[in-house]
Image (cartoon, rainbow over the protein chains, first blue to last red):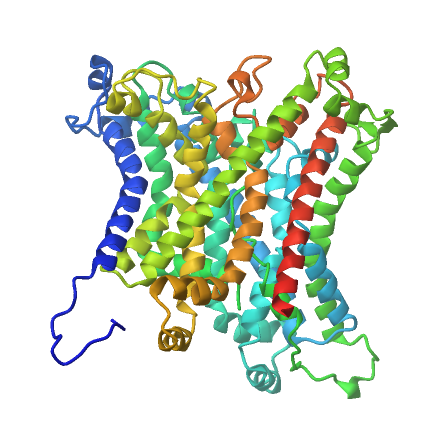
Length: 297
Length: 343
């Protein structure tokens, strides 16, 4: 567009660059979605068709029987009282939502204290918090098992729930930044109207910071919903506390036998479906949330 | 570990820390209760809660694993630490020693896992490059860029477990496997030491760039257009603009993605363990341990605590090796960035 154009040169030159860019993006889209399509194809193929050929079934006679089989052919359903996928889904929901919501409230209050209240040692505390939170401690995730084992929390959902309830320092920094865009005069006005400290948080600050909370909530939820290593470390061998990802990781055990790959694929799709559906409705929030969740400035 | 699952604060805090804010709630001097009025108490409690949680749930594991470097630790008995004469270090670093005391050559697995971890972690650089190229192409506002953007983010919300199921099905060793059908082969991709590590890398590269694309896209959108106009006036072509305007402008994002990517890469567990499960006894991390990452070895040791009294000790040694490596890389990158910011 910024090329040289003169009065004679009316017609646009052929946009070679844009065509190449488009082609590359289409190619990348295929790389991402052909695998997903393959899983979908298998999930609508019948077991008979799968076992009757020695090559991949590209054009199956579409059947949704594998989706039904996810709920009817589950070998642990008798023991659990419901299909594992459902039990896993319910467990995942409460084990994710409980720490996430409590944690967001705690982080929200903490950010409120740092940005809108005054207390002794405020700046020092914030600096210290920031410094220690930059230390990359991810390496200790597995060895933390030793600690939880010694306090008797292994085999309970506590290691997945309690730490999250204290909020996260990253969330605090993020919310603090967001609060700082909210004028102090609003809180001042609330105080004059007789709102207390907690009141001004609930009535004034929180409603104005809802988008920031939503962004943090979505990412906490995606992380919790997809968490595999945590449940594996602490809940393995406790069938009634199984989470969705643990069920999916053991589809070969839950649906044993030959030619059950269609059921495995159907289970994988059902497992991903809730997030995909939410994403379809809230794509903008998801994408913007990631963008603000990372580097600023 | 995945990048960006809700804890991305690098940068934010830094910005917030440097910013002075005016506080609304004025001190109620008339109350006359000195420094400890209601606001101060509430503020301190609110502010401290996340820090307390952090210190408990990161501090204790850190201290225990530090003590475990030199002591045998009982998983079921808090506070039981017995000096073990560097047993953990010997088991992890000395080949003959670990074979005689564990019956398994842990040192061999450790060295193997170091190589595999670096190999798998290199997929993060490829992901970063893909994210950069794709987001720059998206930024040219090519037809349908908004649709592409929405599509490219989908892998990020797919769980690693489901993604591994998908790729295991594609790489299935049966003749009816997808890849085998396409290529007309009957290769056991997931069991053949020559290909198994690559299957992990393909799966990682399928999933990882989505996050980087979103981050780069936001960074690219923030570049002031006047920079490009100035470059045009100086006669810069598209490539020169990319090198001299775009790359420097998005370097904070690159820096952040690099740190997050290196951390996530060196701590790969989920995708490796799901794509290539442990085999029988000696096959930790699959055939010839070609899918064994360091975190998987830590996991194996912790979960097989009957192997020897010093398993936690050995696991701690690997954990600290990882921590020190990731910590120094992060520190070095921070230093480098600060230097380039001064200059």
